[in-house]
Length: 260
Image 1 (cartoon, rainbow, N blue to C red):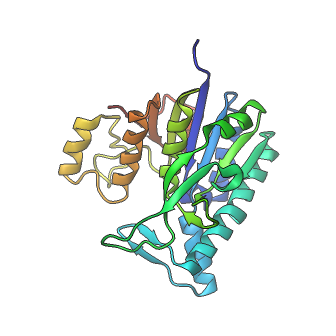
Image 2: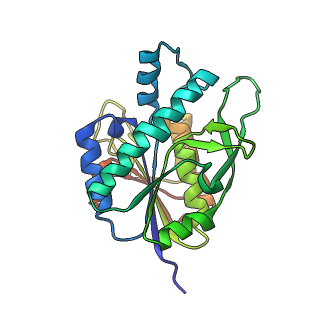
């Protein structure tokens, strides 16, 4: 029997921080008739909040060091302000959404990242996704909205990369659904030349990824994003795309598609 389709979309700070862009995306996302899941980050908002509260934000290679103070800010920003703003925006568009952290209904368990060369603090690496609970929400016609917070099963909340959460959720749901994973950000896709916004690389497989990485065309924050893309494909996610927000309503626009 053919599996039903499922869309897992992830949005980041450049959409969340722009109210007009966020409203437009949520309108388009609400119109999707098939089951869908939304994952959101919010690092820029957390940094703004930390600055307001006089708490130092430390980043290493684009990754946030999550101290106890920063964890409090991450939780109240991601799970509170941003998550509920997105949920209410979807309700406005007649999409029955439910805001979640990984701790809710024990959906996403993680473990605190061990200290090797860098101590990332209260950062979680995902160990388990409870796909049956998510499936239950979807079957009730509820759209789950996940922020970038997980838990360790022992009462500790953890800051977890939103791209990774999207990849792991999409992978876990692939046993019951034909899953498409969409990473939505401000550019049209992965670019050949960062100074040319139209130089979209329309298809990247593992061999091409290796060549682009060796040439430093893919570098910095794009490296972990693509690693999450390939991780999802290895775990039977059907399609993975990187594109700007307009792709959610028009799949014919220029974008990047990933394959193994």
